[in-house]
Length: 185
Image (cartoon, rainbow, N blue to C red; front, top):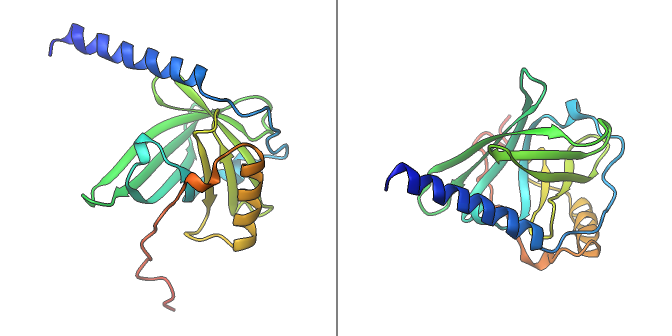
């Protein structure tokens, strides 16, 4: 395929993504956390559950790592293992705060100038568990600093998500391989 056709396909795909996101049902303007501390949020988060979408289809051991770039933006590295091929799939992007620094609103991009919302709806006081919504009802994540989450936290997050319009019955619960060193002293 020549360069002109490739460029047209890329522009068409980008335009399609924009139109798709405009017409998808958008969640109401729910309040994000107001006492957000970015430095405490940085580091590794394990995905406990998600609304499934193309990039994460058939992935296990999904995690995200957040760190700061020299320009003040946030480096985002999402990774997971494909369950059939056992190959690592990784995507590197960047995020930036959207709004006041103490609010849990970020914009994340893995595709150049196109940013999507990343809204931290709940986080525990120790920054060990988080509930994150996207810009519409197709994107939601339950995250933990470890590969598990307490039942009471899970139930709280599920209840809030359901009241917010998410079809929690459609969540994919991420499988994580146990570490061989877990439980050893």
